[in-house]
Image (cartoon, rainbow, N blue to C red; front, side, top):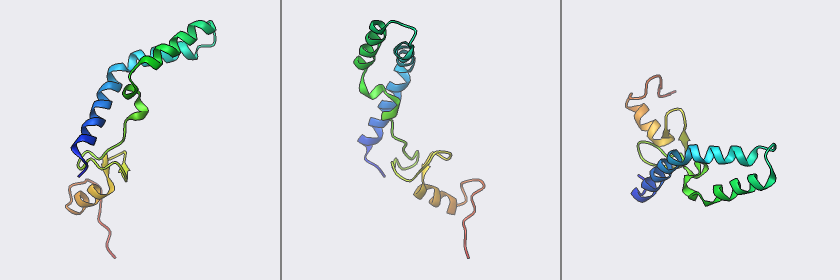
Length: 101
């Protein structure tokens, strides 16, 4: 199980990313539009830099929904390889068959 503080910090980042997503997209569109004057694009970049760093979506870490583990993460199942193996062995993951030979 991961530290509660790390899990909560990641949840806070997810909330902030959702909150600022529209504003960030609008400013990025202005900054990337080459039809606009250079000065206006630069102002958009400065406003983008003023936004909180944790509102950027690339700061969100994929974590296991069950344990909070950050590594060995399967996106499709939203859980780590260890949690997947445990739940799969118990027969709780549909379509997953434990191999034995």
